[in-house]
Length: 169
Image (cartoon, rainbow, N blue to C red; front, side, top):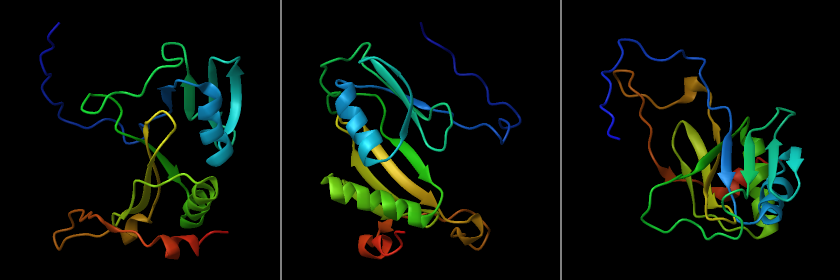
């Protein structure tokens, strides 16, 4: 079925719209829980045996769902195919992101990259199923880089991981 692209509406969607949660197909639920729960520190809010689990930060019903319903024992997606590029987990402060970095280092989980984007600082890695994961914090909006005309001036520069670690609680 081919869909015709709709014409753009004259106004954007309500500014309060948010992405509520991400649900990932995983090959091994326990392996994924060891990463998202034990390393990143998300809390399990509900579990359905060995097939699915829901995790969150701060008591929300779930920010992340994990299931093996269609993927138990399956391989990661092949390179060059479509699918999820990464899940981005927003930390409330630089210190909280520094704590996440410390957790990753203690668990021996390698980073794929780390960047300062002007508006944010970010860590990039993969979960045990090969899903991309971004851990980041946003600088306050008044600190975002802007061009002389007020346009957003995001960039990508190396992130000083040693300096970030010094911000850890």
